[in-house]
Image (tube, rainbow, N blue to C red; front, side, top):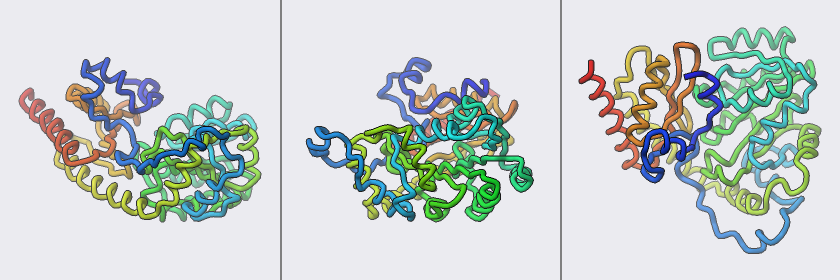
Length: 355
């Protein structure tokens, strides 16, 4: 399993899984994404929303600012955070010195590499080295995915704000992808925007379970948002996304219920995963809407394929030549959790019988 072949592939491809394992699409338990299994309840969209062009000056940024705890002038609505991931590298001169997680959402690396920048990798064990490079003026941009997908690492606010201050002094910036931060709003840097040298990316796809809506936000200083807005062009965020986004972001009672649902389901799933004999040199890493099992790379392949044979789709990642992660999305209910438990325990039993 090569790093390129695994990390460029996105989750949710049930058609490919059905073809690979010979199991019909409708029979799969898809745990390959980090999308909440409970979606904000989509209301009926008025016909007029479909008939009219999307509003150029709509209330969405104001509602988003209230949700994120910042001012509306710091908010730009975009058609999914993927737009910002692909576009932000184009705002910097070539050979900008960029630090990013060694393992994280691969579209970031792809976009910065394509734009011709110089990349420096960091991981959990090299944060002190990263900070020394920031202090020494060796970096122009630092990208943090917080919490990181798939490693589940969550960096503290104080550390990130310190990096931002150091970078901003030299005209650099800190970019924080907070696609999975809604479950831990107290750890977010959104309320710090606008702040010199700080760009925060947010998404409605994960926590709200609305990945198909393709709605996200960039939080930053107005000059940055103006540059991105020029590249967006008119009507970039469609009318139904504007309509539903305003209502979802304003539904604070549902937000509280969703956080409780996620916390409860994750606690049950982590408790299950910790009962499984994954093998030597393995550990369970809890995250917000996913959890990962760190284990030797050969074991990642074996567990991924055995889960696939049971109709359970997971994600696998390479950390180095001998080490990797197997990531599980969140199960929706007791039935799905029991199905996962039965499949994993069957695999353990089969492994023991073969040894």
